[in-house]
Image (cartoon, rainbow, N blue to C red; front, side, top):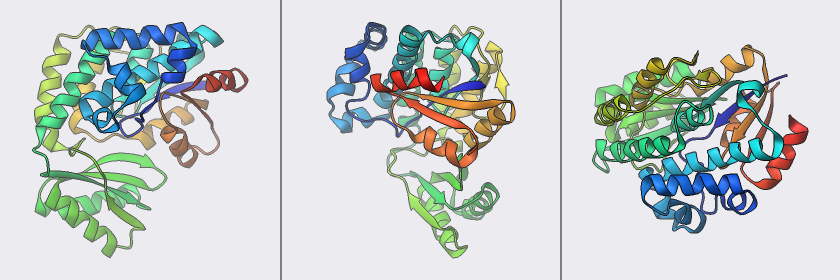
Length: 313
C-alpha cells in the first residue's frame, strides 16, 4: 500500500500549534530551535503563545506552518522509524506546503526553507497594497464553471483561479472589484455559495508578479538538492526530482494556480492508498475525502497522532 506525505498551507495556522510535539520529542525541539535561529526571531514562542494576529501575518504564518510540518516528520522518524525514501511514493504540499514537502524530502535545509518562506511571505504581502486585492471561495463550483466566471469578471480587473481544492471548492484571486463582480456572477449562475475570504493579499494570481520576481532572485542563490522522493508540484500536478525544475516551479507557483485536486488525483491514480498530512490542522485530510474517497487519510500534528501513525502505516 503506497503512502504519500502531504503538507498544509496558509490558513491552517493556530496559536498553540506544535507545542505538544515540542514538549514531547527532542527532535521536534531541534526543528523549532533551528527555525528560530534561521530567522533570528523566537517564532516558536509566537506559535505557542500568540498573539493570533501576529501569527497570522503572512511572513510569520508561512515559516511557522513549515516548522510544525517538519517537526511532525521528525517525530515520525524518531518514534516510528519513518524513512521517506523507503516509505513514501510521493510528497506534496498546498502552496507554502510545497516548501515543507521539499524540506521533508531533503531538497532544502530547514534553515534555508525558513528564510525563503520569510522572503516569500514578505514579498506576497507587499506585492499588492492592502484593500486592492481579494480572494473568494466558490463552493459547489467545478473548475470549468469557476474559469468561466473568472473570465467574465476579468472585465473589471485581474481575476483568476487561484486554488482548485477539489470537491467543488475553487478559489478565485485578483483585483477587489473583479472578485466582487465574480461573486455576483456566481450567484446569478446558481453556484451554491460564493464568499470573500479573510486574506491579506490576492495570492496565486498575476498581481503577485512582484513577489514572483523576489522569489526568482531568492531561489537563484538557494541550494536545492535532489529530493529523496518525487515532489508533486502545485503548478503542473506532476512529480519531479530535478532541482532546476523545482527552482523554476517555485517561482511559477507564486502567480500560478494551486492544482491541488489534480495533485491528489495523480497520486491516487499512481497507487497511493494512504495519505499522511503532516503539520497543523486537518484541512488536507478533509479535502482528500472529496477527491479520492477510496484512499485513507491521517493528520499528524500532535503526539497522539504519532501513536496513531503506527497502526495507520
